[in-house]
Image (cartoon, rainbow, N blue to C red; front, side, top):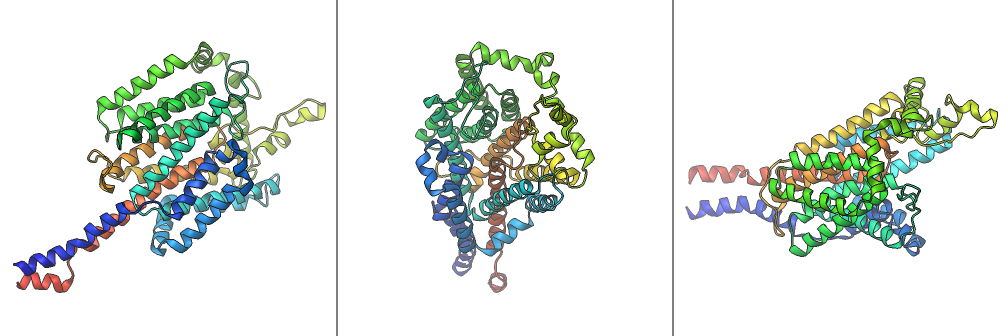
Amino acid sequence: MGSNGARLASAAAPVTSFAAEANGRGWDLLLLCLSGFILTSVARLHQLFPTLDVVRPVTVTGVLAIALCLIDRLPANRLGTLRMPATRYLLALMGWMALSVPGALWPGGAFATFVDFAKTALIYLVIVTAMRSARDIERLTLVYFCGTVVFAAVVLSRMQFDLGVEGRMARLYLYDSNDFATYAVTAMPLGLYFASSGPRLLRSLAWAGIAVLAVGLIWSGSRGGFLAVLAVIAYFLLRYTTVRGSWRLSAVVALGVLVAATAQNTYWARISTVFRPGQDYNLTSDQGRLQIWRRGVGYMIQHPVLGVGAGNFPRAEGTISPLAARQRLGRGLKWGPPHNSYVQVGAELGVPGLVTFLAFLVSVFRALQALPAVGPPASPRSGDRAITPRLAQALTASLIGFAVGSFFLTLAYHDMLYTLCGFALGLRQVSVNAARKQRSSAAPRFDDATSLATG
């Protein structure tokens, strides 16, 4: 009997040691490089503090992360990443983008866009491959949230942004006010994740960060950001099952009180135009979003297979647009962006590109939904099985915010999206790895099973 118990304990030991190993390891150089990339490529902190730009932190941290991932992580992790449907769709999108280069309206611009997107896809692969446990993803989501808060706090404190006639931010380094609003909305669910669990100090700091983001969202005056945050709130109230309903309602009420106390009449006047479309230039002007979207659909119909070329929407506006003839008459014409990520992909990469892009997004959401929906309350010492459901739902809310906000913005190839998707698929990967490891470790070896049967 004692011998049998020893054998069973020996068979179960790898499971315990695996869990301890996965949750016990902290920061390493690869995670630090990924954090640096997130803080510079997404949060743009090197633009807030120009001295950091001397060392080209985006390039340095990105290259180091790729090199360390190739050296430090197991090939099996890389193969698992490539088997994921989302990864395959992303690689297919990148390949289709490459095919659009030769026939683009401006091949040079299309090639530059392809190179930038290839770098983004590589970082996505590194994030998914580099994750050892849900704790690693939790660490990087905290970096993402903190980077957003620092960006918002610095911009609001310096007050160096331009205020337009409507009292909204008009210039935010390389973000405009609408881009920043969507960025803030994607970070808020991650802030709520940390505000609902963990040490008391972290919860307090998370609430402070959420308040900063809410104020920044108000100052942005973005109607797309307003709709995105409504979508996130709806998901948070109705589907965020890993947090008590009373806590969720209290959090939404607290945010509502903050917005009501901070927002001025100019903000509500601007937001009210969402419900009074007849007064919105986006619906009445030929340079408004609605007409731009219609022209974008026209470009997709004219070039249904490969589109006008990656990054070539502005070129299409100035050369093949129905309004292009104005320029021969000496009238000005803005070679502007599509202001819609889905129109952007459809016009620039054709129908197959748009289908692939949508399939990528759907596969990311499905990967998150495949994770456990309900788990025990998380605590500072919780293991992966406790924090994975909460992280999955927080990332789902973030991606919902992006999906809605990007409907009004040109963000289809932005690092923001693929960083969040990397977190989501990394969480899926570590969950699959842990389940596989547990099954293989729990199954007794043949000789152990024979001994148990004959003992």
